[in-house]
Length: 169
Image 1: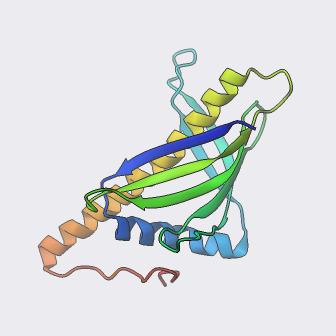
Image 2 (image 1 turned 45 degrees about the vertical axis):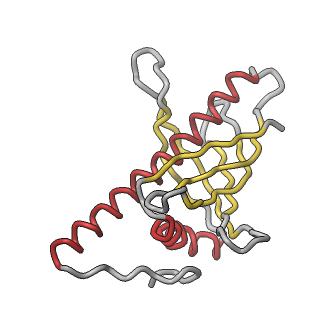
Image 3 (image 1 turned 90 degrees about the vertical axis):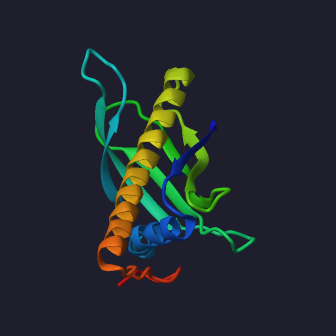
């Protein structure tokens, strides 16, 4: 199976991004409940500007032998008609060099649907799906972090982050 590696830099410190991801995925991972996500793939097809596709995501807790990063298993499959690659891999937040930002990393394999499906098109669809998935997460975390920083400047107090491993409730 072909391998996919996508990274997205996020204007959000590692400890915040890691806590945000933990908060977002902890309950989904514990229940194993799939989550339906609508992604906008940025393709220019007949001047539509892109393809909107429902994707079914499933998350779980991954294992980091070094106990530094908290990887999450992630699988996705497209819903409805179309030849979209299924994916199985890990999503990890990594510290960036200056610790003022972080890196979302998605690594795994994808299965190209159908024997006759063009490998290049399958690779492009898998990469576009991964980029859009990471872009969606990054935009959410950057917006959330910016709001928290603005609130600190206004109130003079920092909001409390849940400790790693908690559900944030």
